[in-house]
Image 1 (cartoon, rainbow, N blue to C red):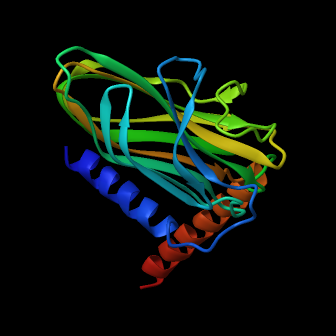
Image 2: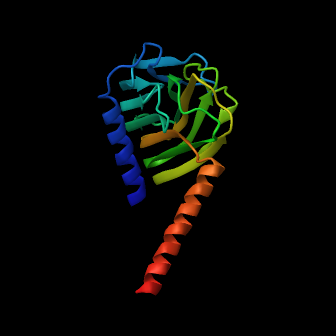
Length: 236
């Protein structure tokens, strides 16, 4: 539970922090979309897409939404490309179940690119009251399409059986080839039983992995330091 709260707090803080960044080129806009279909057909854009940050409070598909936010660091840096999502509350105030599908995404990521390989860390955590089923997945689209969930580059879906309480999970993907520009999208399926609710914080990070030669050099350096320490102890 402490780990979940820590991750959620860090994600919410990061979303708030990225919302204060200066604007990026007009083609890079964080966009939040919602649909009642799993393939996002007829998707509706929630709120106003914004450079680095977007947020929405209102209702969709019978679900009350409080501060559903998305953020990104597009166009990225050599060490990190990132999309974040968070909500204070999604609540079904109806007596019958409701399912909504959400995407939070941004385009125009220029780095990092691969090779060297890129590690994708897809994280989701939060808490549920009542009975809530939940699926989270991260997509990376080499064609740079907005809120794309048809890309061949995606993490394994993180599926949480219906229930209550806290949840937390990371899924990973290694990308060996990726040019620029590309887009990152987080895809969520939320099924809320009557009078149930959820809050969550999601994060999709792309970071370059060290090349084998760099790892070998680092390893040799570490061995040298160990040898130096042993020699000093023997001399003493």
